[in-house]
Image (cartoon, rainbow, N blue to C red; front, side, top):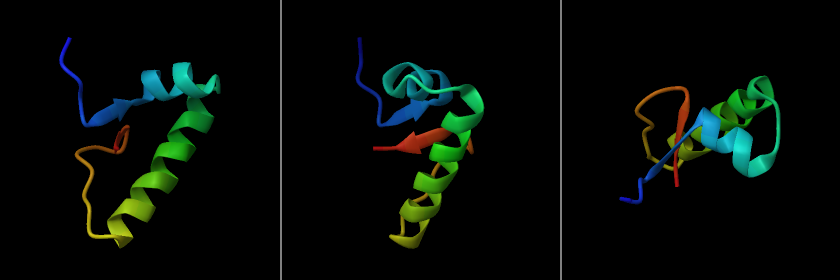
Length: 49
């Protein structure tokens, strides 16, 4: 299986053992932080790592 540079919301839910709404909040916050550093995410439900 190929390793991705993105985590989708379902993966965040599983890895952090949190609800979907909370996972979306985490992703949004991390994407905002990455944007300030000059990175860009593809979609609101994915994070770059």
